[in-house]
Length: 362
View: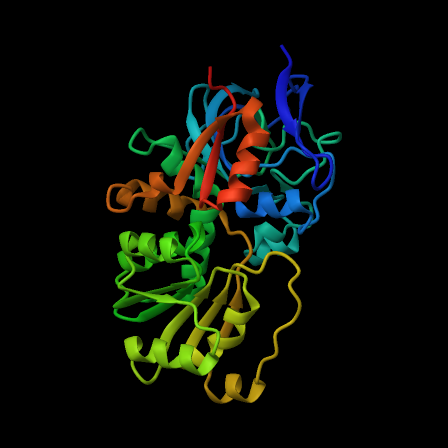
């Protein structure tokens, strides 16, 4: 029986529903029925033409589903358990080889033969995105099985937003009893606020332009919220009035706004860490004062995607704390696969943190 998927052909054009043949599985591969796919901000950038992806393609990389077929030699999940038919699971945004220099360096998300879900041309790699009835998992895909504790809407963002935030905190280091400033109160920023709270940060400051999102931040662990201030001196004063005259220990930049990137080094304590996460599309350059970075011993890190361990940590975090923070409320609406263009329009017009596509909803 053919498998249906929504195919992206060009920016500004509606997605088209097409049919694909059921794949013949090779060693280490899995076929999964897609139970839920949440639409990430990166998907919306691709649809607008702000981020280049090959076309035609099946978008969607925040996915979970149920295994409907495995090969003769099935893969194991990240905990070493074989994958079997009926498993409910999520998986990494990319499959990597595990043997190239980058994989050996500990950055498999930059593998030299990377296969990325929701980003591959569908005429060469069919059923490789989440906006489809099924997804074909390739060898080298990190897999995490899901328990019944998490709903689909709580768990689905784990394979992009939550795992990326886990990666950001990995490079930020120990934040126990420290101050953390988060720019952006979207899915990344709100998840970061919750994770900072759980990890014992003394102050969790969330800054955004949208007052409604700042209200949400207080439900996700923020101890303080700040409305964005254009004047950098006023912004610095506002942050220091909360964190103290020395500034904050860590800045997590989740918004991708150059104005936030520009002011961030001035908000850090000596020895502070600045982690950039949100800049995933071309946005021009930002000037830095290198003397201040050197003299004040600042560390600047970029995070793009994550490692398999980050994904496992993300699922563990959601499992342990989904009742402490209202993650399910961040998914504003659910749509069927046939309603995918309505979902995209809704997401672009109303800017919710997420909308969900449930391809097999009867």
